[in-house]
Length: 600
Image (tube, rainbow, N blue to C red; front, side, top):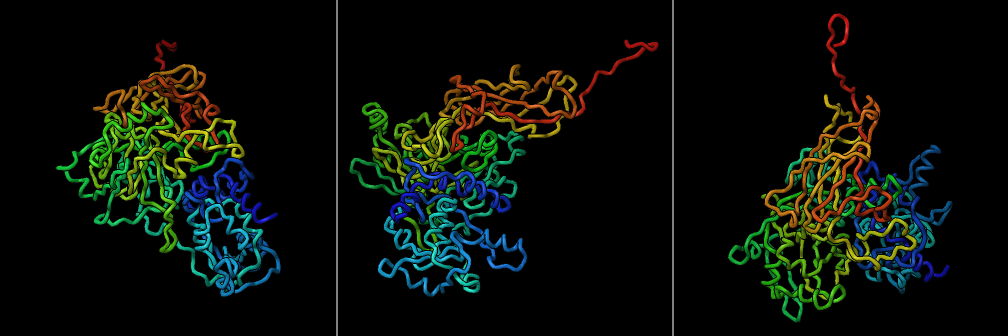
């Protein structure tokens, strides 16, 4: 196979390598099985996948995965030998040539040849680098050295198909002594903040964790900051608040406007604005989709959603201050429709880094139509406070652009730039992720350019109490109490929630709608409580029963019945009826009163 063919094959290493490499890694005790799942489900080739690479895709800087470095050379037993073989880098062979690391260092340019090491393996990638889909700059950063820290940062490499390509370039290995003396890979997540141990961690690096079910069951309107769900794609950036500057490019040749945090907090310049709004990952409830067939991404249960009061200044006001005409978005939308409307691009300060090197092209970015950002009824906020406290670092401090009603991916954290532009953000996460295909599309034929990015979230609801498999006592009237949340994007409030034990007979839930938010301008969640009658034929002690809920929003959009109808390879927008299996305790019976030996 020629170098060109190898490069093309690498470029076709499915988008799943990027969207899911770290997503599949929860805590370290789940890492091994997650990687096995990655390899098992990997498919070869796609005509539509974007150009991913042996080392860092162009706009990718995907979520990082730190591969734990275990000693490769243990002792003696057959079991140990098997374990050792499993940990060797791709392409390992018996009795292969031992190459000194000093020799690797000499091959650090296209003239001398480009050699790299990965774990104990040595690879000559000279033929590959010019065809590298991620560009020459990134791959040359590792020339004559270790690629381990870069693969830790660019986690899309940690799939079997990419490792298979690397294996073909293997020319030898380091000695046991020299490999063990090499420094551990740089950890780009070493400066991340400490987190509350109550969070349900789904991935450690980058950190992703959901609000625990027990907290959701308490139905606290504002989720406490410390247990608010966290979704990161990259390391948390280190920011000097005193030097923070937000750049705004208003377009039409107008000069860039720069605002410090103090400028944004100056109440003489900008009025304060508060909005209670849900933040929800588009992958919330992904584990329900996995129950049907495996999808890619973090195994979110029902807790990738939280609600907060965001305080800051109106995004509309800041754009106007920067010179953007207040109706510019609406005018462009009416004049040009979908194709020619203006967009507001947002860039975050989170970007990949290895040591002192930062990838200037790999920032996290997103965009929404400019008309949305300028619509006063959309209540978009540049937030610097959350639930009455300074914005926590994990949630975007010093400034987060909060776009209520949309997928959380559109509310960019650690905001660095606002750009009025004629097109969407070209960020990977706007163009090649967070899109929902129909259930028959596979990774072999997925064309991300054919679909719009997820914006407003669909109607959804979930049961928070009782928990799955919990033993529940029936009331004297043969009911069980259910509690949960409901939410719909785009400002659509919740009209109703129903619960059932058989999917045929439904009972209305009592709603706790958010205060001071109109039904057609609702950004916060709705809590609900219901007393669900259990049919006699299901009320059997010790027997599992499945209880379920569904919601309708103010526009009477309803949750679909089956998982099949919403299943998609990326595992997003799961909003079918939510079902929980519980176990009934002893069924109470009516006590009979006896007189003269007969039942009365």
